[in-house]
Length: 219
Image (cartoon, rainbow, N blue to C red; front, side, top):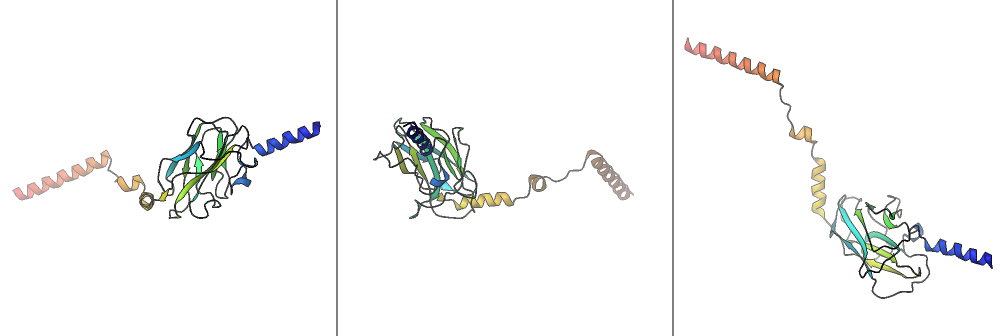
């Protein structure tokens, strides 16, 4: 009997994943908690502070409750929002996230291509910065796909919470490219000025030449 209880406890800890989403969930973004026991409109939302993306341009991403219902776990990715949205690869990288959250390595490109919880404490809102780090070209509209685990019990979770679309900003790419191609400030804006001694010598020579010309004309 004791062995069964111990085995059950170990299995629960393995499935609950209080330390964050596993890499195995990077494609379907489903928690290994069994079938969800909730349905209907999720009491959570993902919002963004920009409607466009370009290489190196940051976007603030917020996952929050819409009615004070706390949550314990979450998983966020940016993907191309097309007919393959549910299986597309994560894009960009997350940074500036709070301590109770962290990056998840869902691609070989970087260790923060996805973002999720690092403990199962109750949360009402989490915020991070996402930056597109691919080539500055239009890969299609992007959107953030989110899974939120409410917990109590762990089968209370919501999937496919989706943000508004981000459209490619070609102008932002052109501005960034122009800035990058400019020479550095010292070379482009600064002309070497003569020092004080050099200025004095030049002034003296000019005075002498002027005096000679005046004398010649007077003669």
